Amino acid sequence: MIATGNDEFSEALAERIGQFIVDSDAASARSLQTAIGPSDVGEPCDRQLSYRMLGWPQFNDRSEPIAAIIGTGFHMWMAEKFEARQTPLGDGAPRYRIEEKVTVRESSGTAPALRGSADLFDRLTALNYDWKLVGTSSHDKYRRQGPGPKYRVQAHLYGLGQENAGQAPERVVVVFIARYHELKVHVWSEPYQRQVALDALARLDRIHQQVLNLGPEAHPDRWSQIPTDGATACRFCPWLKPGSTDLSKGCPGTNTEAKSSQLEALIA
Image 1: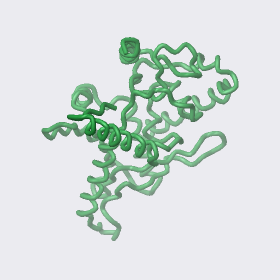
Image 2: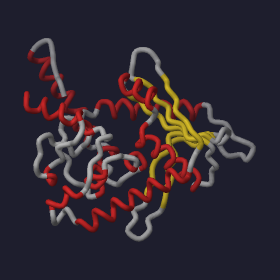
Image 3: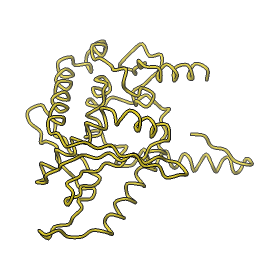
């Protein structure tokens, strides 16, 4: 957080307002959520998912809440606008399923349940939408390179959730909207594929079983046996701790973003 003002009083007030935003976000339902959701499953890094599964203490205090807060507000705005244009279809049910809770799967054995809130499902066109409000550099990256495994998996998991709710999704859609003074919208979509979701769930269960087998809570040295992935965005990982040599106290990261964060930390 950076707080400034034109004089001592204003600077102190800026600090208080900034801290109010940080504290309020930390107490929000989104921040307090510990269970893995559809947005987490496609994360390429096994270690990050393992930390999340165990509810491991987070170490990365470099992350700021403002982007997520703005994104939450945008989701609320979109929900309100689609609710305003809601119409019934031939069966009498509403056309749009807006911010509906869906169950991707129920718990079974050691496999945990997976549930989430789908942004929008259009029953008329059989499209499941996911809104992503992103920075301009990220917007350009997704436009050039596609949504990446995390967002692609999330889209198909929500498709499975809609299927489990009795719907028949035909395509999954991720809408990237840039936080920019000029409206920039990029849409990625592809036909819904149940197998993409099932493969992601199988990977999640494999990682979960590995965590149970290794028991890193009682054996911290075993964290090193859980691999990382260079494709993950280390800079934004809640468990990133540049320079860490004790994985129970944080992960040093593996890619250039993490190394940049480590350099910045050393300079500071």
